[in-house]
Length: 311
Ligand code: NAP
Image (cartoon, rainbow, N blue to C red; front, top):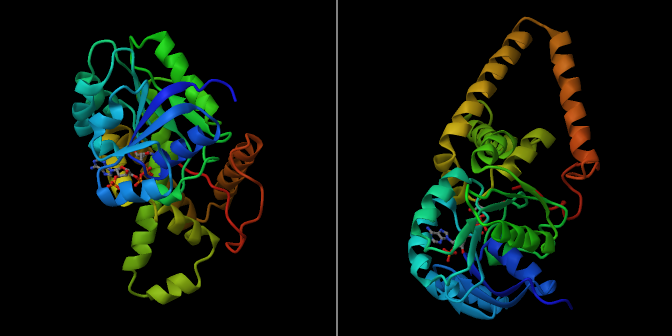
């Protein structure tokens, strides 16, 4: 096996994403030593049983100490506390990265707490599932999925290159953009769709004329797909909305305008306009399949294990 990309990898948080990184790093020899940290003894014991690392601690500073690459894998609302805890323990030349679904806010939370000579190279693997915890991860999660790297101005080129190299080693395709642009793109491709799913499942739960058992019994493809998305981790998603407020509100404003237009078209029987939109959206779906980001299999909800995707 080739020399590892990283001597010592520190993982702060060992849920779905952290444990997937641990698994792929181990499977592909990306790190010689994996230092695992998580906040609770219970999760730490589960990570140890799964043999995800070489050393284990509930103290973030211990995982960060002597690590060449430290990856923060906790909900984005917890970053500032983590950055304060790891800052004094980081060695000169270390790289701090992360996996958070929001990027502008994490730069603001982390950068002020890093010592001189340590670069923050934020990353967002656009890959995930609706499951959480160390048992939910798997080594192939990042294969052929995009990882968006969003270095703040002034980041050392070598630190960016090494972070990109690590994510390519995990199987990802990498794209570089600014944190602000990332947050706008993800607001429409991921954050608003999740909000719509949470809302529609919530609306169905509040209906008085339709019983809950009818909703479950007759959940056709459309609703069922929303329930999968709306089963995503509540803490993670609360933090995403609170930390990408501006971009989400901007995209929600546009969404609301378009929804009102659709409402009018239905009210006034403007079938041609509905048909035209539905034709355009079908082409977008075809584009996603052609880009290899989804498979073109009919989904009746009863197939064997679904493709693991999301993010
Ligand atoms: P997860 O499975 O729920 O694991 C969360 C990890 O963070 C656990 O180790 C947990 O520790 C720790 N944690 C939770 N709250 C914390 C707090 N307040 N302070 C310190 N540590 C805390 O979550 P995940 O799905 O891996 O998500 C982690 C990050 O990846 C998030 O920033 C998310 O935005 C991003 N992300 C998620 C997905 C996805 O589909 N899930 C995709 C791409 C990116 P304990 O268990 O010990 O409490």
